[in-house]
Length: 377
Image (cartoon, rainbow, N blue to C red; front, side, top):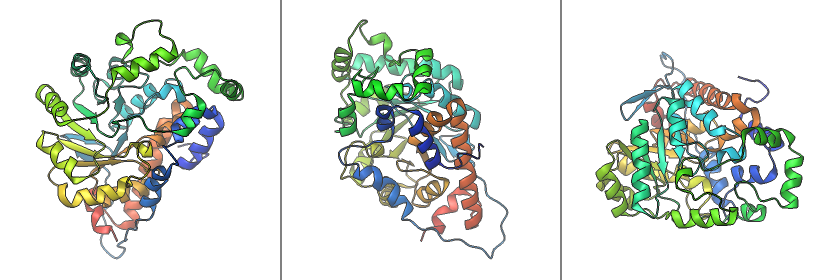
Protein backbone atom coordinates (compact mmCIF):
# COMPACT_ATOMS: atom_id res chain seq x y z
CA UNK A 1 0.00 0.00 0.00
CA UNK A 2 1.30 3.43 -0.94
CA UNK A 3 1.69 5.34 2.37
CA UNK A 4 1.09 8.68 0.65
CA UNK A 5 -2.62 7.87 0.22
CA UNK A 6 -3.76 5.70 3.16
CA UNK A 7 -7.41 6.83 3.06
CA UNK A 8 -10.18 7.29 0.51
CA UNK A 9 -10.33 11.00 1.37
CA UNK A 10 -6.67 11.45 0.40
CA UNK A 11 -7.21 9.48 -2.81
CA UNK A 12 -10.23 11.64 -3.65
CA UNK A 13 -8.21 14.82 -3.19
CA UNK A 14 -5.40 13.46 -5.36
CA UNK A 15 -7.94 12.43 -8.00
CA UNK A 16 -9.42 15.94 -7.99
CA UNK A 17 -5.96 17.36 -8.66
CA UNK A 18 -5.42 15.05 -11.66
CA UNK A 19 -8.83 15.23 -13.36
CA UNK A 20 -10.59 17.98 -15.31
CA UNK A 21 -13.33 19.54 -13.23
CA UNK A 22 -16.17 18.18 -15.37
CA UNK A 23 -14.89 14.60 -14.94
CA UNK A 24 -14.45 14.97 -11.18
CA UNK A 25 -17.90 16.53 -10.86
CA UNK A 26 -19.43 13.53 -12.63
CA UNK A 27 -17.68 11.14 -10.27
CA UNK A 28 -18.18 12.98 -6.99
CA UNK A 29 -21.46 14.80 -7.54
CA UNK A 30 -25.07 14.01 -6.70
CA UNK A 31 -28.46 15.30 -7.73
CA UNK A 32 -30.22 18.56 -6.84
CA UNK A 33 -28.52 20.08 -3.75
CA UNK A 34 -26.61 16.83 -2.96
CA UNK A 35 -28.46 16.35 0.33
CA UNK A 36 -28.79 12.57 -0.01
CA UNK A 37 -25.23 12.24 -1.29
CA UNK A 38 -23.90 13.60 1.99
CA UNK A 39 -26.50 11.83 4.16
CA UNK A 40 -25.31 8.46 2.88
CA UNK A 41 -21.95 8.88 4.57
CA UNK A 42 -22.95 11.07 7.52
CA UNK A 43 -25.63 8.60 8.62
CA UNK A 44 -23.12 5.73 8.49
CA UNK A 45 -20.68 7.76 10.56
CA UNK A 46 -23.38 8.46 13.16
CA UNK A 47 -23.73 4.74 13.97
CA UNK A 48 -21.73 3.49 16.96
CA UNK A 49 -20.25 0.06 17.65
CA UNK A 50 -19.45 -1.50 21.02
CA UNK A 51 -16.12 -3.31 21.59
CA UNK A 52 -15.67 -6.34 23.83
CA UNK A 53 -12.17 -6.40 25.30
CA UNK A 54 -12.04 -8.95 28.14
CA UNK A 55 -12.76 -12.16 26.30
CA UNK A 56 -10.80 -14.86 24.51
CA UNK A 57 -10.16 -13.88 20.91
CA UNK A 58 -8.84 -16.03 18.07
CA UNK A 59 -8.55 -13.37 15.37
CA UNK A 60 -10.80 -12.01 12.62
CA UNK A 61 -11.72 -13.47 9.24
CA UNK A 62 -13.17 -11.38 6.40
CA UNK A 63 -14.05 -14.36 4.22
CA UNK A 64 -17.69 -14.52 3.21
CA UNK A 65 -19.86 -16.66 0.96
CA UNK A 66 -22.30 -15.11 -1.50
CA UNK A 67 -24.43 -17.20 -3.87
CA UNK A 68 -22.24 -20.22 -3.16
CA UNK A 69 -19.00 -18.39 -4.00
CA UNK A 70 -16.42 -17.62 -1.30
CA UNK A 71 -14.91 -14.14 -1.47
CA UNK A 72 -11.90 -12.83 0.41
CA UNK A 73 -13.71 -9.77 1.79
CA UNK A 74 -17.32 -8.62 2.24
CA UNK A 75 -17.22 -5.93 -0.43
CA UNK A 76 -17.20 -5.73 -4.21
CA UNK A 77 -16.80 -3.12 -6.93
CA UNK A 78 -20.13 -1.55 -7.85
CA UNK A 79 -21.20 -0.68 -11.40
CA UNK A 80 -20.27 2.84 -12.56
CA UNK A 81 -21.20 4.40 -15.88
CA UNK A 82 -18.79 6.24 -18.20
CA UNK A 83 -15.75 5.01 -16.27
CA UNK A 84 -13.16 5.80 -18.92
CA UNK A 85 -14.39 9.38 -19.13
CA UNK A 86 -13.05 9.77 -15.59
CA UNK A 87 -9.81 7.86 -16.20
CA UNK A 88 -8.75 5.85 -19.27
CA UNK A 89 -9.21 2.07 -19.02
CA UNK A 90 -10.50 2.40 -15.45
CA UNK A 91 -13.16 -0.25 -16.01
CA UNK A 92 -10.55 -2.77 -17.14
CA UNK A 93 -8.24 -1.81 -14.25
CA UNK A 94 -10.97 -2.42 -11.68
CA UNK A 95 -12.08 -5.69 -13.26
CA UNK A 96 -8.49 -6.87 -12.97
CA UNK A 97 -8.33 -5.64 -9.37
CA UNK A 98 -11.43 -7.62 -8.46
CA UNK A 99 -10.03 -10.76 -10.03
CA UNK A 100 -6.69 -10.36 -8.23
CA UNK A 101 -8.26 -9.81 -4.82
CA UNK A 102 -11.10 -12.33 -5.18
CA UNK A 103 -13.99 -9.88 -4.82
CA UNK A 104 -16.98 -9.37 -7.15
CA UNK A 105 -16.92 -6.90 -10.02
CA UNK A 106 -20.20 -5.53 -11.42
CA UNK A 107 -20.16 -4.23 -15.01
CA UNK A 108 -22.61 -1.48 -15.96
CA UNK A 109 -24.53 -1.53 -19.25
CA UNK A 110 -23.43 2.06 -19.90
CA UNK A 111 -19.75 1.91 -19.06
CA UNK A 112 -16.77 1.83 -21.37
CA UNK A 113 -15.62 -1.80 -21.48
CA UNK A 114 -17.59 -4.54 -23.19
CA UNK A 115 -19.10 -7.65 -21.69
CA UNK A 116 -16.62 -9.76 -23.62
CA UNK A 117 -13.58 -7.73 -22.54
CA UNK A 118 -14.49 -7.92 -18.86
CA UNK A 119 -15.23 -11.63 -19.21
CA UNK A 120 -11.74 -12.10 -20.62
CA UNK A 121 -10.13 -10.17 -17.74
CA UNK A 122 -12.14 -11.92 -15.02
CA UNK A 123 -12.28 -15.34 -16.71
CA UNK A 124 -16.07 -15.06 -16.68
CA UNK A 125 -16.26 -14.28 -12.97
CA UNK A 126 -18.24 -11.01 -13.05
CA UNK A 127 -21.72 -9.61 -12.48
CA UNK A 128 -23.67 -7.52 -14.99
CA UNK A 129 -26.00 -4.62 -14.18
CA UNK A 130 -28.76 -4.17 -16.74
CA UNK A 131 -30.33 -0.83 -17.58
CA UNK A 132 -33.58 -2.15 -18.98
CA UNK A 133 -33.87 -1.46 -22.73
CA UNK A 134 -37.11 -0.16 -24.21
CA UNK A 135 -37.11 -3.04 -26.72
CA UNK A 136 -37.22 -6.66 -25.55
CA UNK A 137 -35.03 -7.72 -28.47
CA UNK A 138 -32.07 -5.67 -27.18
CA UNK A 139 -32.68 -7.00 -23.66
CA UNK A 140 -32.50 -10.56 -24.95
CA UNK A 141 -29.31 -9.89 -26.91
CA UNK A 142 -27.59 -8.47 -23.82
CA UNK A 143 -28.73 -11.37 -21.65
CA UNK A 144 -27.51 -13.86 -24.24
CA UNK A 145 -24.09 -12.20 -24.39
CA UNK A 146 -23.83 -12.24 -20.60
CA UNK A 147 -24.66 -15.94 -20.42
CA UNK A 148 -22.24 -16.81 -23.20
CA UNK A 149 -19.50 -14.82 -21.42
CA UNK A 150 -19.95 -16.84 -18.24
CA UNK A 151 -21.73 -14.24 -16.11
CA UNK A 152 -23.56 -15.92 -13.22
CA UNK A 153 -25.23 -12.93 -11.53
CA UNK A 154 -27.50 -10.39 -13.21
CA UNK A 155 -28.33 -7.12 -11.45
CA UNK A 156 -31.50 -5.26 -12.48
CA UNK A 157 -31.45 -1.53 -11.79
CA UNK A 158 -34.61 -0.25 -10.11
CA UNK A 159 -33.68 3.26 -8.93
CA UNK A 160 -33.40 5.10 -12.26
CA UNK A 161 -36.99 5.48 -13.58
CA UNK A 162 -35.92 8.98 -14.70
CA UNK A 163 -32.61 10.71 -15.26
CA UNK A 164 -31.51 12.52 -12.11
CA UNK A 165 -31.39 16.32 -12.14
CA UNK A 166 -27.68 17.00 -11.62
CA UNK A 167 -26.81 20.70 -11.85
CA UNK A 168 -23.05 20.18 -12.16
CA UNK A 169 -23.47 17.88 -15.15
CA UNK A 170 -25.87 20.33 -16.80
CA UNK A 171 -23.39 23.17 -16.33
CA UNK A 172 -20.53 21.05 -17.66
CA UNK A 173 -22.44 19.88 -20.75
CA UNK A 174 -21.47 16.30 -19.93
CA UNK A 175 -21.23 13.99 -22.92
CA UNK A 176 -18.92 11.37 -24.40
CA UNK A 177 -16.54 12.79 -25.50
CA UNK A 178 -16.94 15.89 -23.28
CA UNK A 179 -18.45 18.98 -24.85
CA UNK A 180 -15.71 21.27 -26.16
CA UNK A 181 -16.76 24.44 -24.36
CA UNK A 182 -14.04 26.95 -23.52
CA UNK A 183 -14.48 26.04 -19.88
CA UNK A 184 -13.97 22.32 -20.48
CA UNK A 185 -11.04 22.87 -22.86
CA UNK A 186 -9.33 25.01 -20.22
CA UNK A 187 -9.88 22.30 -17.62
CA UNK A 188 -8.33 19.67 -19.89
CA UNK A 189 -5.33 21.89 -20.61
CA UNK A 190 -4.65 22.19 -16.88
CA UNK A 191 -4.72 18.38 -16.47
CA UNK A 192 -2.13 17.22 -19.05
CA UNK A 193 -1.69 13.72 -17.59
CA UNK A 194 -5.40 13.03 -18.00
CA UNK A 195 -5.48 14.59 -21.47
CA UNK A 196 -2.49 12.70 -22.87
CA UNK A 197 -3.74 9.46 -21.32
CA UNK A 198 -7.07 9.95 -23.08
CA UNK A 199 -5.36 10.65 -26.38
CA UNK A 200 -3.33 7.47 -26.03
CA UNK A 201 -6.32 5.33 -25.00
CA UNK A 202 -8.74 6.71 -27.57
CA UNK A 203 -12.18 8.26 -27.24
CA UNK A 204 -14.33 6.55 -24.57
CA UNK A 205 -17.24 4.60 -26.01
CA UNK A 206 -20.25 2.69 -24.73
CA UNK A 207 -18.42 -0.52 -25.55
CA UNK A 208 -21.15 -3.04 -24.69
CA UNK A 209 -23.72 -1.06 -26.70
CA UNK A 210 -21.45 -0.30 -29.65
CA UNK A 211 -22.93 -3.07 -31.91
CA UNK A 212 -26.38 -1.48 -31.58
CA UNK A 213 -25.46 2.20 -32.02
CA UNK A 214 -25.75 3.51 -35.61
CA UNK A 215 -22.35 4.70 -36.87
CA UNK A 216 -21.55 8.35 -37.36
CA UNK A 217 -23.93 9.84 -34.78
CA UNK A 218 -23.14 13.28 -33.44
CA UNK A 219 -23.06 13.66 -29.66
CA UNK A 220 -26.52 15.23 -29.76
CA UNK A 221 -27.96 12.34 -31.74
CA UNK A 222 -26.12 9.78 -29.60
CA UNK A 223 -27.83 11.28 -26.57
CA UNK A 224 -31.21 11.07 -28.30
CA UNK A 225 -30.48 7.46 -29.27
CA UNK A 226 -29.62 6.51 -25.68
CA UNK A 227 -32.75 8.19 -24.32
CA UNK A 228 -34.88 6.32 -26.85
CA UNK A 229 -33.11 2.98 -26.35
CA UNK A 230 -33.43 2.75 -22.57
CA UNK A 231 -36.53 2.92 -20.44
CA UNK A 232 -35.39 2.93 -16.85
CA UNK A 233 -38.56 1.99 -14.98
CA UNK A 234 -38.43 -1.58 -13.73
CA UNK A 235 -41.83 -3.28 -13.49
CA UNK A 236 -43.12 -6.61 -12.26
CA UNK A 237 -43.74 -7.80 -15.81
CA UNK A 238 -40.19 -6.92 -16.84
CA UNK A 239 -38.67 -8.70 -13.86
CA UNK A 240 -40.87 -11.74 -14.48
CA UNK A 241 -39.84 -11.92 -18.15
CA UNK A 242 -36.15 -11.78 -17.25
CA UNK A 243 -36.54 -14.32 -14.44
CA UNK A 244 -38.14 -16.72 -16.91
CA UNK A 245 -35.07 -16.73 -19.17
CA UNK A 246 -32.13 -15.92 -16.87
CA UNK A 247 -30.77 -19.11 -15.33
CA UNK A 248 -28.25 -17.51 -12.97
CA UNK A 249 -28.61 -15.42 -9.83
CA UNK A 250 -31.00 -12.46 -10.12
CA UNK A 251 -30.42 -9.39 -7.95
CA UNK A 252 -32.53 -6.22 -7.79
CA UNK A 253 -30.55 -3.03 -7.04
CA UNK A 254 -32.11 0.14 -5.68
CA UNK A 255 -34.57 -1.39 -3.23
CA UNK A 256 -35.28 0.89 -0.24
CA UNK A 257 -38.77 -0.02 1.00
CA UNK A 258 -40.43 -3.26 2.19
CA UNK A 259 -43.19 -3.23 -0.45
CA UNK A 260 -40.69 -3.29 -3.31
CA UNK A 261 -38.59 -5.88 -1.49
CA UNK A 262 -41.56 -8.18 -0.98
CA UNK A 263 -42.57 -7.87 -4.63
CA UNK A 264 -39.03 -8.53 -5.86
CA UNK A 265 -38.80 -11.72 -3.81
CA UNK A 266 -42.20 -12.90 -5.00
CA UNK A 267 -40.95 -12.51 -8.59
CA UNK A 268 -37.96 -14.76 -7.95
CA UNK A 269 -35.15 -12.37 -6.99
CA UNK A 270 -32.26 -14.11 -5.23
CA UNK A 271 -30.87 -10.98 -3.60
CA UNK A 272 -31.44 -7.27 -3.02
CA UNK A 273 -28.97 -4.39 -3.06
CA UNK A 274 -30.18 -1.50 -0.92
CA UNK A 275 -29.09 1.56 -2.88
CA UNK A 276 -30.11 5.11 -3.75
CA UNK A 277 -27.76 5.34 -6.74
CA UNK A 278 -25.12 7.09 -4.69
CA UNK A 279 -27.41 10.03 -3.93
CA UNK A 280 -27.71 10.80 -7.65
CA UNK A 281 -31.47 10.32 -8.14
CA UNK A 282 -33.68 11.43 -5.20
CA UNK A 283 -32.28 14.11 -2.92
CA UNK A 284 -34.94 13.73 -0.22
CA UNK A 285 -34.65 9.95 -0.04
CA UNK A 286 -33.44 8.04 2.98
CA UNK A 287 -29.78 7.12 3.38
CA UNK A 288 -28.88 3.56 2.47
CA UNK A 289 -27.73 2.56 5.96
CA UNK A 290 -31.10 3.59 7.43
CA UNK A 291 -32.99 1.74 4.68
CA UNK A 292 -30.79 -1.32 5.25
CA UNK A 293 -31.43 -1.34 9.00
CA UNK A 294 -35.18 -1.17 8.43
CA UNK A 295 -35.27 -3.84 5.73
CA UNK A 296 -33.01 -6.20 7.68
CA UNK A 297 -35.65 -6.54 10.41
CA UNK A 298 -38.05 -8.07 7.90
CA UNK A 299 -35.93 -9.66 5.19
CA UNK A 300 -32.59 -10.78 6.61
CA UNK A 301 -32.52 -14.56 6.36
CA UNK A 302 -35.11 -14.57 3.59
CA UNK A 303 -32.76 -13.25 0.92
CA UNK A 304 -29.22 -11.97 0.41
CA UNK A 305 -29.39 -8.36 1.62
CA UNK A 306 -26.58 -6.15 0.31
CA UNK A 307 -25.89 -2.40 0.41
CA UNK A 308 -24.03 0.35 -1.41
CA UNK A 309 -23.83 4.11 -1.02
CA UNK A 310 -21.73 6.30 1.26
CA UNK A 311 -19.07 3.72 2.14
CA UNK A 312 -15.66 5.37 2.43
CA UNK A 313 -13.78 3.21 4.96
CA UNK A 314 -13.53 -0.21 6.55
CA UNK A 315 -15.38 1.21 9.55
CA UNK A 316 -18.28 2.06 7.23
CA UNK A 317 -18.37 -1.55 6.01
CA UNK A 318 -18.47 -2.78 9.61
CA UNK A 319 -21.36 -0.42 10.35
CA UNK A 320 -23.27 -1.48 7.22
CA UNK A 321 -22.93 -5.14 8.18
CA UNK A 322 -23.76 -4.45 11.81
CA UNK A 323 -26.90 -2.72 10.52
CA UNK A 324 -28.01 -5.81 8.62
CA UNK A 325 -26.19 -5.93 5.29
CA UNK A 326 -24.56 -9.26 4.40
CA UNK A 327 -22.35 -7.73 1.73
CA UNK A 328 -21.42 -4.26 0.48
CA UNK A 329 -20.43 -2.60 -2.78
CA UNK A 330 -18.13 0.36 -3.43
CA UNK A 331 -18.73 2.77 -6.31
CA UNK A 332 -16.86 6.05 -5.95
CA UNK A 333 -14.02 4.80 -3.74
CA UNK A 334 -12.39 2.46 -6.33
CA UNK A 335 -12.77 5.17 -8.97
CA UNK A 336 -11.00 7.69 -6.73
CA UNK A 337 -8.19 5.19 -6.44
CA UNK A 338 -7.77 4.72 -10.19
CA UNK A 339 -8.09 8.44 -10.92
CA UNK A 340 -5.46 9.17 -8.27
CA UNK A 341 -2.98 6.37 -8.97
CA UNK A 342 -3.82 4.87 -12.36
CA UNK A 343 -3.33 1.12 -12.71
CA UNK A 344 -2.27 0.76 -9.06
CA UNK A 345 -5.27 2.60 -7.66
CA UNK A 346 -7.67 -0.33 -7.48
CA UNK A 347 -5.21 -2.39 -5.44
CA UNK A 348 -4.63 0.57 -3.12
CA UNK A 349 -8.35 0.91 -2.39
CA UNK A 350 -8.89 -2.79 -1.74
CA UNK A 351 -5.93 -2.91 0.63
CA UNK A 352 -7.16 0.19 2.49
CA UNK A 353 -10.58 -1.34 3.06
CA UNK A 354 -9.20 -4.72 4.04
CA UNK A 355 -6.71 -3.29 6.54
CA UNK A 356 -9.26 -0.91 8.06
CA UNK A 357 -11.96 -3.55 8.37
CA UNK A 358 -9.49 -5.98 9.93
CA UNK A 359 -8.45 -3.40 12.51
CA UNK A 360 -12.08 -2.61 13.38
CA UNK A 361 -12.98 -6.28 13.82
CA UNK A 362 -9.94 -6.87 16.01
CA UNK A 363 -10.72 -3.77 18.08
CA UNK A 364 -14.31 -4.91 18.57
CA UNK A 365 -13.29 -8.47 19.40
CA UNK A 366 -15.36 -9.75 16.48
CA UNK A 367 -14.09 -12.96 14.89
CA UNK A 368 -16.55 -13.41 12.01
CA UNK A 369 -18.59 -10.95 9.97
CA UNK A 370 -21.88 -12.53 11.02
CA UNK A 371 -21.25 -11.37 14.60
CA UNK A 372 -20.99 -7.67 13.75
CA UNK A 373 -24.68 -6.98 14.57
CA UNK A 374 -23.93 -7.99 18.17
CA UNK A 375 -21.68 -4.96 18.44
CA UNK A 376 -24.29 -2.44 17.26
CA UNK A 377 -25.19 0.15 19.90
